[in-house]
Image (cartoon, rainbow, N blue to C red; front, side, top):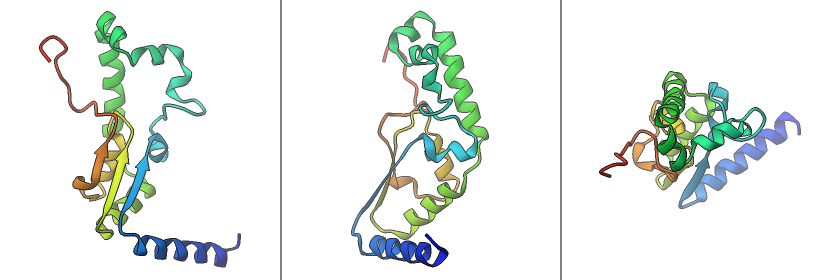
Length: 142
């Protein structure tokens, strides 16, 4: 494609968004990869290490809670240090512009939601579908 046809495609997409009564945007780890955060799948993804897969289970937490807390604590610290990238800013702008917008996040570490919040993405239009590590509950008393 040349620059003119790229621009035409973006204008058609913008017209499509304007005409849409509701927009749903599903995001995952790839959104934050340009911000320096490791993805779960893909090349060099965290799930490529079988030992890390074992961490994401209630059984492993029961056996070795310190290791599990350390892993997820480290992930959260990296998330807190990350900065939004161009995609986060674009989604934030689109969510502020479109009346019926919902961004669905599938990351348990809420990295995308935290980064999107920094771009003034309306919090009311962000939904975590796998829960979030920000909310902790006691496994003894629930």
